[in-house]
Image (cartoon, rainbow, N blue to C red; front, side, top):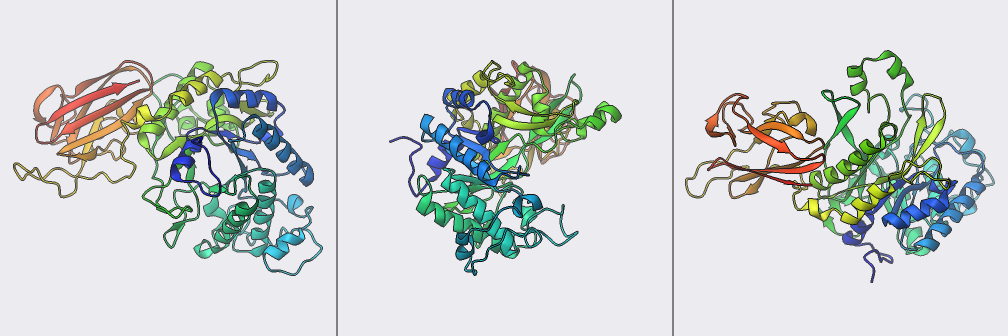
Length: 507
């Protein structure tokens, strides 16, 4: 039986099989290169296609939209029936989309309301004027908004979609106290999925670290864009990734308690490149302006091919060692917004060819990483929980109390998202792994020579290094960290009672 088999139930190992072969395939249902896209999907072994269908602002052809969604799903599933396709239900609804769509009788019936002949009512769906981030945000405390989400979700299920991305869920549930409205919609779609989905199961994620009510998670896994930190001492627009929070736990929709649910990282899009920033801001100002004056995917797409390949590898390894519950959604297809010419464009992983003239030629790099898998790097991963341990731990021989806080510091720190020589950094804080030992794993994106030391209790008054036989104070006397190649995974281990430091590296 295939690792990806499920029917009515999806245990965590099956869910993780799909997430470990995930991609962002935004609007692939509308792709004009679908045959070539499917070739890339089969070549790389992708099994989960996120954002495959959905609207932010529609084109007014509701039936045409779902016809395209179904046709694309049929074609993809003919090539590989195991693939999960994800549809989107977002945090925005536009009047011209809602008020041209008749409310089907089955929607009224599902909500226990009298059947009427009318279209969806935009004014009854959104927040009161001035009450939220923007005027077209649905208010999921309102029945009309719930009806709209249920209507579109059910139609996607009928088209063969088995997953839903729910966007910035904490925005449109701002008045949905206790998440009763969105919880109702999700459960209604789950119930419909049990009856009508391809494999009698639908799964949900949103941009959230946790959405738990009475101990139970409304989502099957959490999802967020990466967080970045700019590197200013190298030419170009260099960035490193920074871990932000963790995936919360709770009782999963499968009824199993999880300390941490799976987590999916992605390169997000929201506006393309900021032309004004490039014309009016300094180099340093742009560095801190989102991703160097752009959104994530447009920054990525604007790098040269070699740099993009390195950053794909870096993102994959970074995810593996920084979040053992985390997975990386490769950018198969993603809108990169307007460039300097004002034209909307699309990033595609495909090799550039007559079949895909706008390809970015990264399918081989992605295929290699997906074949390699996560486990080689998971073996070096930091703990899944942001609990550093070491509390009330004593040396069994001497009774000496082990420090609660131990930090690796030095010139390497900016390349993992911290300030150089910050002995108190939470970003490079080491985890207690038992028997008086502490460890930290990180990915160094650039080869080179760096220095480092270990600070006990997070101060500069009691430091140790590989270059000094006894504890010292200050930032001097640090040891060398020689990184042989870009994207090297580094693990530093420190034993408190002996001051022994070990460094391991894998590429």
